[in-house]
Image 1 (tube, one colour):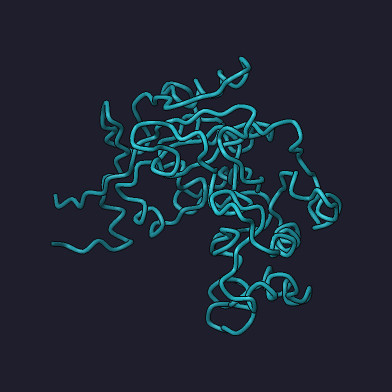
Image 2 (image 1 turned 90 degrees about the vertical axis):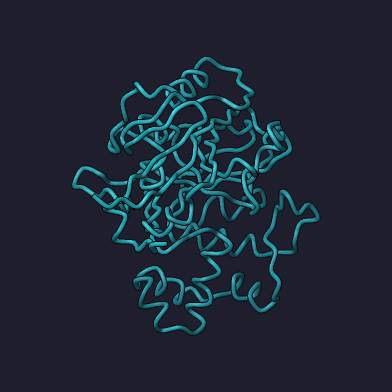
Length: 297
């Protein structure tokens, strides 16, 4: 059997598959279906319809605007028990989750969604044959949006965990420190982070401000090469906060596979983890799976 390498992606058909029909190229995809929903407003239903309709045109990066409706990509198995929607399923397994605007799913194939969310070639290869769903969601009114970008303001309040934040480096550092507390008794929807090692918890809570600044400025490969406490802390950010090697800290993703002068990235946010039945509105949309096939012409 041939072994796939990352450059071989150039010779691969990236095929998002849905139960009804196969899409042969990344720019096209079949109509998507809604697996489950709790929709109260016409605005929300319109957004869901646009994501499902392959005829809807992609919204340019420069026209993507934040609202109180968000979008998240996750594996189908995390929100379904068999073929039945699990309304007690959480958005993720950590206290805060990455989100983007719902238009990131409009007019984009699954491959293009992965690319816009910052997945690199290796990351997409790891996703092969994983059945994915798009979560479109609106929080209940008590969850507010914070415009803070410097790690203060709402993050200093007792109810800091009732806000959606722009994940700048400073916001991420402060949020990480505040979430590094005692674990929640509910392992499926934790309010604070779990650590197997208390030294890592202390590192997350008390890592020096000057070293945080250093980490935000030094390229990821150099941090890895240098090692030491800085690299341990950076790895914690990745494993606990999902801040991968392409995290920019400016509130926009990095499109790693389809870069262009007019592709600035899609807006990204971090919001409190909730179960589906703890949201104001939601829709779970089947977006298929990626299949990779090596081609020899």
